[in-house]
Amino acid sequence: MNIKKTALTYNFDGDGNTSSITVSLSGNEGADYLNANIQVTPEDLTSGQTFDNLTMKDITTIARKKLAKATAEDAGTK
Image (tube, rainbow, N blue to C red; front, side, top):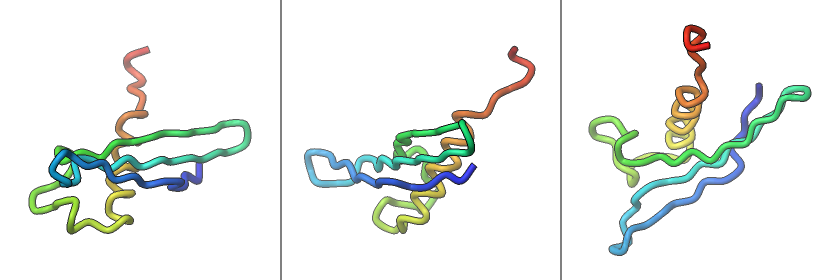
């Protein structure tokens, strides 16, 4: 499925620091559709990464990985 970024929204705390970034993703393949808002938080960043030194591409990559993990189905749970 071709999943595209449709929006990227920075969220700030009371001091003006980036607290999270919401990435909207959308895709379809035939009759299957996907729409998701993934919130990238400081816990999703690796050591040395900050919101200030990430590109939009980096943030989108993190969101895509988080989406894949969130939607992965364990065949043994059915």
